[in-house]
Amino acid sequence: MAGNNDDIDANDDTDQSTSLVTTELNQQIVQAVGMTNSVVLGAAGPEAAGIAYQKVAQAAAFSVQDATDYLRNIMTIAGTAQGVCLQLMIENPALAAEYVPIITAATGAVTSAQTNFTEVGAAAGTIVSNFPSS
Image (tube, rainbow, N blue to C red; front, side, top):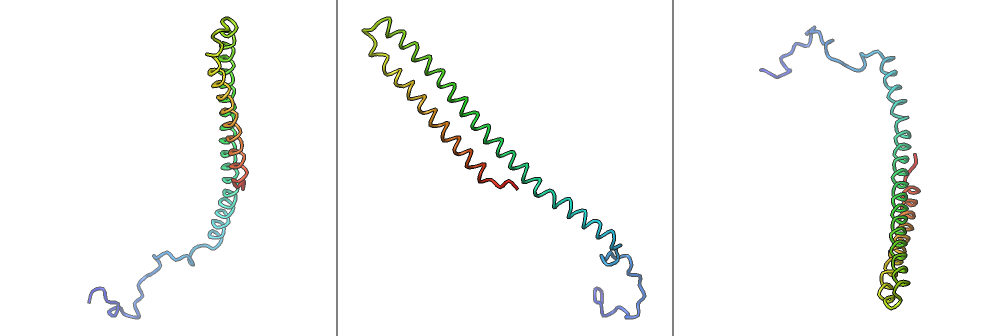
């Protein structure tokens, strides 16, 4: 019957050496490959974690830098708007009240940018300090 092992003669001397069994491998080679894998993969974990930490810290620094640039730009715009309003107020004191809302809005924009800067800085610090460095 095909596929039935009962038909195989127990004294069959068929060469079974073509199958690969790990016990037939040179044990020195097996140890060398194992040791190489252990050294390479063992060092890769901390190294990769260090690189990831550097990338997270760099991204956090970029976000703080962007918030700084935003604050600086808002302060420049607000300062310019306030300067123009003050000039117009001096030129025509009768219309001075019309420029107060613009000065107030410019001041509010600076306050909002300062709040944004503080929040971004705090969030960046928290993210970096909570990220595993190794």
